[in-house]
Length: 241
Image (cartoon, rainbow, N blue to C red):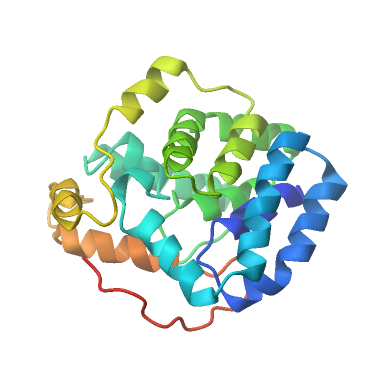
């Protein structure tokens, strides 16, 4: 098991009191494995400190603003690759099959392209295989890191760490194309509504659902407990779009 992947998975999960309490353990795991360069570890230390000392509800609100409300920062990998196209359905099935063949069973309501879940799976694989798998979405991870850098978010460090670990480095032209996509401010509700106004994903001839349904599914996926930790109820911090 590569504990660094599990630690990064937890850091990208919706903040809870359990995660706050586990920060020293996460830091120790990454330090002992020594897979990340000093510069990235220092960046990660800032995030660890923020999560440890921050007000839990403020941390949860920040998480929602970044990763639930802002489509360009979605923690669902295929959002950035397939959008709402039909190709996304088959990609989901293929990834879920990969998990099952590797011994990871996920719930029927869970989306397999959720980054923390993907990292949880990588933590169970041989390290070289994990690095190779991580290289496939490296361009998406690099674009997310850059968008977070522009927002001066300490979450940038997690994605810098992932890009560093990926066997295949992102191609600049692909990253630039991703960064050219709309990236609205999470407080600009009109721009956010426009960004979400696409056709729904259809996984079969009779599949229905609305964009709102898709967004709710994403938000619920973001509440998935971190590996090995129980879910605690969170106080609503802001109205949903």
